[in-house]
Length: 340
Image 1 (cartoon, one colour):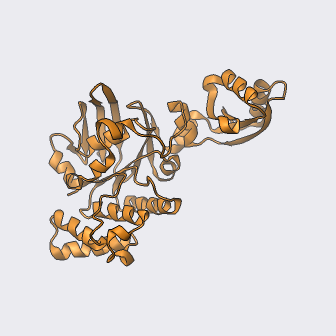
Image 2 (cartoon, rainbow, N blue to C red):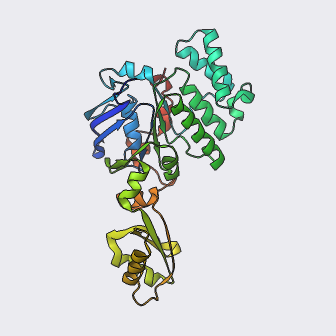
Image 3 (cartoon, rainbow, N blue to C red):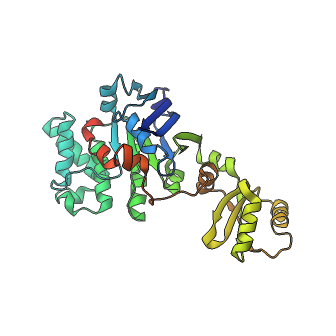
């Protein structure tokens, strides 16, 4: 059992023209763990994955995956990793079994071994009943599972999942989460990028929050929440005037805001004494606040405190992804460069 990091990066920088996407990213991922890179659109998540999976060279800095340098040992890195992007890169004209057998042959498995590996993965990903139909008839969740299965044909040590549940319904997303947990049980290291805060909370052993091309915080989910606040006091206001007045007064102390619901969130230790003190400070005349509630801090609070805004979910166009470096669909299409 090796103690070296499965993924390590130091001082990664990358620019596209005048746009500086990465500004000195440092990362270290323990083997057999799930590491989540969490950040808003354009933060540098996909660029980081492309560098670590050898698809894009950094302008500065160094990175090693499974002990191999991503520049000087590029070919060796590709033999021990797999990359699954935001869009399933499987052949819709072939059946599920044919896709997996083809990947097996591309990874230099013999015909019998490729058939056996295909059957094994179809069973593991609950796709045995869908082995014969063509992939064009699959649901979105089935395609994602097949895409991930294809990336595992070659027994990778490290698998990169770039926003793997984008566009999936809640049930399919939950199924993918179970698949990821199963990978770690088998000793695979999973490097995950996501905008879904719940996804990082559910899956990741450690989380790095990136914003503006830099890692602004790293730790376990509990550690990151504790940095912001153990508890959050949510205040609901009766009118917009009261909401805006208090928001201005609290300033950087705000850990949450929702103008549509006239709600502000502020850190608290959860004790009755502290809650009373906050209410007296925020609404001394007891007219502005209609009601309040105390809740545990969430990753959304962390995200907002560190980046200045709430998570964007699936909305928005990521300049990093759609502009200088091209959509993740292009990266996913290079299966032969990652795991084959």
